Image (cartoon, rainbow over all chains, first blue to last red; front, top):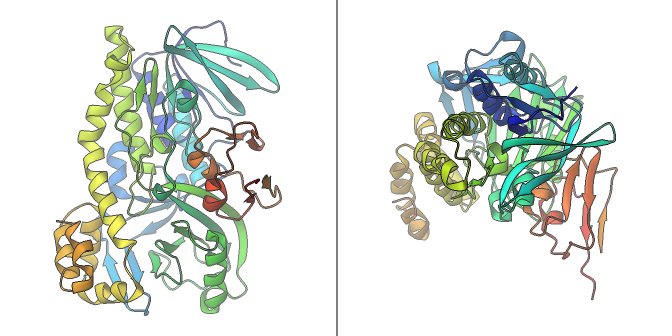
Length: 396
Length: 59
């Protein structure tokens, strides 16, 4: 059990990929780390389609077999008229993970490095003294206690309140949060179990997309992420399933997930005196596909480096921690902001525009766009249509 | 008036992220709502992926 008399260097709130990245890094540097997770099981229930590119292993490390449900080598983007763009990932493919195994592996790694990890422990409030965050008030099995630490890491996910309670407004604007809903399904008739299928169109998924991410021979995450629309995300997904019996007839639902997906609203400032925010809590997500695993890891590792440095210097003030803002924006923020602009353009396209793009673009183009590369090409295609000139100019 | 259908809510916390008044919190066992802080703006209803929240502005 947690030792409340101990003075910790850092307390990490939330044991997702962001929190575990900070905890591991800091524990390895010899810091006294405690990581708390409010859920009774780390990694569950997932709020994620579980896709991750191989390249993420460069920062996460080699991912063990037990965390991987499926290898992915291709993607298929379906335009509203049925026209498909095939993306051959080649060496840049990826995995569909099993998040509840993956997240526990990450947390166990942090634990092995020396961090004290405890699930089913809810953080209720932050402790502030003389303008500095100096710990948290938490609860375990109905008993409240305080944990003092030099730095509090808010890695408390999309529902983050830790930073806001400390006085840093991380509320996201509704235009920057997609509404997500997903079934993990069984007994599906999958076209290709190593291929991610993406369905676009304003009737199917208004200003968003539907995905089928295979997890096995006949199982997959089938989900939707959309901007707020007339109906709920669940409504559009249920309709899609009903309209595609060739895939879904007699399929079962083995898990139901939902979530808000940050797709923008990056924060200029993610630190206060004694506080640092990472992952979904800081909206660190790629806005074009809504993937946050890699971004949370990046954010967590950058935060870890800054924390180690700040404690070495003995300066945990906002100023001392603000290097985190600078480095994150340089390494990730500027790129993600570019991708956000792309997302804002794509979500304004009509079904006809999307059909036109499916004719004009290749799989390679799509991969480039999601990496923030060659976005000008999209602008050049769009600008040919007089109605889309204003929109296209946003990309130049 | 703010209402939640607990049978529909999946406790994902999407609503918490857009609440401008910190009236919503995702606890270990579900969503909590503070009616004293709530301004009934309806953003939580809009973002909810399953339609579990209903907000009616009181006149």
